[in-house]
Image (cartoon, rainbow, N blue to C red):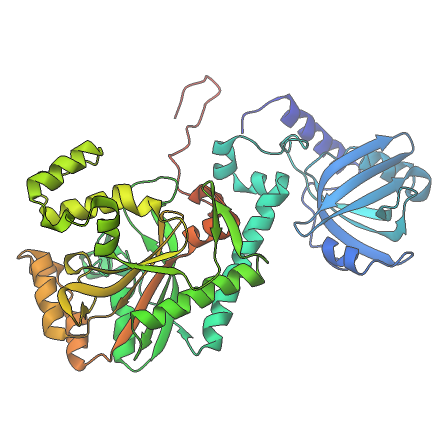
Length: 485
């Protein structure tokens, strides 16, 4: 923080408080309850102890009022000179907004009807050296909000509430899955091969083994090995890392829920995700309609389902799959979808789907029967081996959850991996393939992006709004001579 007159004044107040017997950083303080708890159990005349940060103060001659916040609620304090004595009262008036204090006193209700603690003694727990954001407008600077989330939480009550809801969502997901017999497990975050998805990994080096390692892009292959081992229902609330771009719906470090169920398939995952999302919407947010990205979205089930090829035909015409590669490329140019020169017809079609069709699916929609080349870990459709038995759940034009009937044919999986590796055996996960050869029962698997789910449920337009500390460019530091570091 740059030195300025406000900081210097606070340091001067700190010195005066220390001289008056109030050290800048006090010891632990035992409180009767949180401020929310005191509000709920309020009893006039009761003696209580409370603590928190001063977020408002009004000093008037021989009396002062303040509002204390501890993250659960705000509560008013009143201090009177004739009750606590001149020296203690004068010291209290040296406090600044942002200071953290502990107080003891009697509960009463003011003439304006506000529940209040009449202070009989107080203690400084930590002196704040920088001013809080201006109270009427909160913290508005987006860069500061994301980089210094603590200030955002202090000054914006709705932000604190959002992240409390996020914690409630994670807890409820775990309870929901546990009630259905799923085991929560943990798998490695640092792996010898970054498998389970098509993405660029972050790379590191493990000195003890003298080998390069990767931060995981997905836990899928390890979770399937647990299915092979007899853990029939497993899930992991995992952190994934992808060395790719930043935008409104992507962060390189993100939270995902992956679920696998032996003897299930894509259909069992469909039922599961509809039940889970509607349960969260009802229990945590008490609504089934949300507004997201400028659209009103109704989460009531059943959700729409449409096959990939049928969706393509709806938008590009019934004769689309009879067209030539040149015709497909020309159409992409007309609608300004960028196409790489080496793309074949199927790849051009999918690029058009991702850039101009997927975004039109506003209400929850299962897009099924995708081309097999897109999903090398999924089982072929029984009636057409060029397609796979999967769904992509699209909500608000964004993918929320993919799910598969998992491929459990070990030889076919090996063939697909070898094709994907293009002659590089180091890219093939032999441990996973050996596991498949042991035998994996028919399995349904699904991934749900938790950050994107939170965006949907809270109506947030940017992923940074639902991640406490999103990735940002390094902060520029300024020296006293104004040279940047």
